[in-house]
Picture (tube, rainbow, N blue to C red):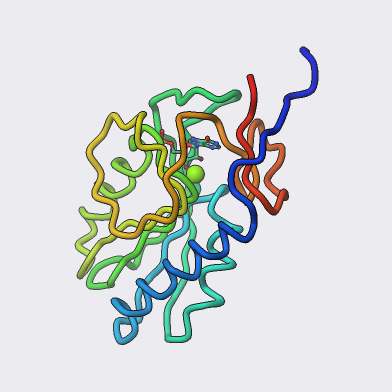
Length: 175
Ligand code: IMP
Ligand code: MG
């Protein structure tokens, strides 16, 4: 192993909180009377989801899907794996996918294709962070929190090899 990775502060918890509050307002405006099904992508989105839903004061349901494309390290393998136990009652529901980050877009494209085949009444995509520069798949982002530079980021649920998810702020990893 090399030396300890260096973390450079990128987004403070206050900046994140402002973005989450704005997203909650946008989602509330669009879903108040729709009893939406929020599908959060594990593991990374669990911190964002828990802050977001506590600002949504209308009926909704929550499901989780466990996807992974990264093995170890910071480069996407390009192959997306879905763990068993994915939500099944999608038909006719207003589905909103909740992600921590969109990078190449391969994970989102895979999940949205999968869900679309189950005939939801509507299907939209919300991400806390968007690493725009690295997009390889075309994905329509309906709710975007913060744009981030082409750096590997950790904290607020985001990990590097399962480390740093618990940090309240978001950091760029210096490699
Ligand atoms: P994509 O398929 O390349 O868009 O990557 C999406 C998934 O990769 C995300 O849901 C994250 O789990 C992970 N990921 C992408 N970029 C980062 C990063 O900078 N930090 C931590 N995880 C990341
Ligand atoms: Mg993720």
